[in-house]
Length: 500
Ligand SMILES: *Cc1c(COP(=O)(O)O)cnc(C)c1O
Image (cartoon, rainbow, N blue to C red; front, side, top):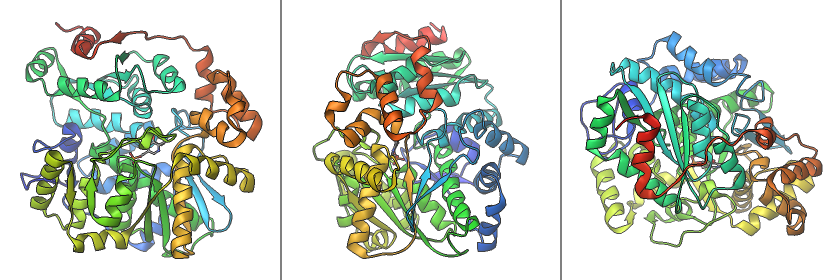
């Protein structure tokens, strides 16, 4: 399988090259030249496989320049009992007769980013070896919370890599901060940046685009790389769990082989739901993809009107990992639905950069509407949804998952569709303990409590077990206390790598 950019036809490259490079030179995203299609019998045969076997099967199609032994090693290092708290990695939880949660948060950081970031470091180091540079890979991350910790956990002690994460002094939750400053591993570094997420992000970007700095690093045996969600190596592992969910439903007798199901996905950067789209294109029997947003409902508007317009107010919500106005991975969807017409993609992305807005033609909008249904849910409804699902089923959702559940309810209301539906559950409720407790038990229940009291209280109220990685934070040493100005970030990285 070869890859090229969404914005030009250039010379196709291998998957290792695409993963190593991350973003194409022309600013486009790497996409596969064709999309493999699995037969129904092949999909059925996944039912009797483990998660790792399923992952190996799907990834083999896309990472054809990896040997079977290399791929197996990557998969087994990522999805192990040591890293995940459940045997089957991404279990299904039934809610009533025709709704299921696909729990993607049993990994080390309790959010779905682990599904990709546990395997990416292994794919990346193999890719760099294959491309023969022999350099040590330096990952720089600016994070608004979940990604930074998931990347640290994924890259910790992975040979041939170093990772440094910048988080904004203002804007991450207390538990997210604790998760980062207690990070163990001999190749990791963490600092906070004065300012907000944009300050941290623009600082990291300026390091990435500094050619002179890249030379300095190169001379010292380092190569900069990104663990960003536009990297193909982060997207492709996410296709696996949609197949896995289908295989589990079939195995458990919930559906017949070939029966179509819906997926409802809480969406931010459009990575998770794009993986569901690829699964559908690969022959997985999928009816509708339900795209759920919070109040930052730019995707809802786009999928309903064909106009993508980022000139709007940015809201800080209870589902912060979906507070995004530029959904980068949408570009891959448009490329595919537009039949690979990169000239159009280029024009739309230029308009987006220049005016903050673009419009797709009615024909393309119709194609999108045949595949997707989109809706959004505000904070108040998010809390009410957490409460009502808990009251009815004793199932506790985090705020992101609740957005998807609410939008799915809107979908049923609007369409009367009876098709069985899997909702992607993207974080442990313990990770967003304060919002979940307020939803279940009112504002007074959290007053004056610290993070660990909140964890205990949520466990007591719901009879759920606190994920080990979160309860352990209380007694772990605080290892990082660097705070820097945005302008000092280069220097902080240089000190971390000991280059001058
Ligand atoms: C990142 C994230 C999302 C959004 O996923 P995208 O791939 O960016 O659409 C949803 N929920 C949680 C908990 C996340 O961390």
